[in-house]
Image (cartoon, rainbow, N blue to C red; front, top):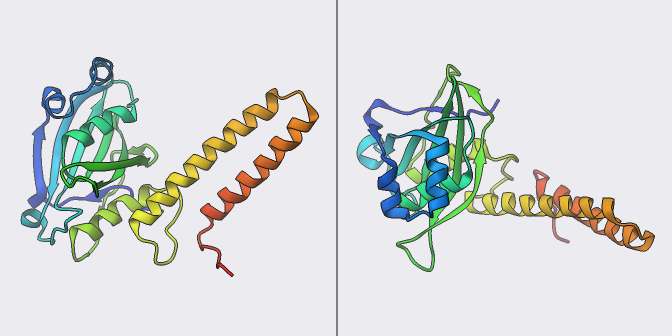
Length: 228
């Protein structure tokens, strides 16, 4: 079973409540997004700060620190737009633990500095665990050389498909995003074929479905196919 929750060291404990208005000051959310915060979020706590001075791991240009947040939910639901707003407000990689009625879900996006503007961060789609009982045992942090490697270990268990041999985190995230895109296209095709009345069009859409299924099978295969 993949480890979803890690036992962060006491030396990294931060434990500060993060007021929503502080997030608003930095991310400038719309009125609708602020309403989502109010409806869905009870409390945000900046729980741990994983940095060279707290866990004695070397920082890297892409991962200077890693922040761990807990978010207590009001009704067990949280839109990814809320998380993206927090990610925009905090200029470091983040990992969230959502809490609701004795259960916990771990969720995070892959976050990296923008190549066009080092002051900005690029945030991927979100990856998440199932809901787990709060008493589920935590695993110790892996033994690694720097924060970049630690970040990869924290994100890896949340991804729906395993890494291929030698596949680094950015390429794996790119592959996961492509899988999601192809799966959405597949769903659209399946919806179209159900509504289509003309036989010729059904044949064409079926051909599209076969191609999409083959592409998804290739992308989800653990080993990449050799190129002749």
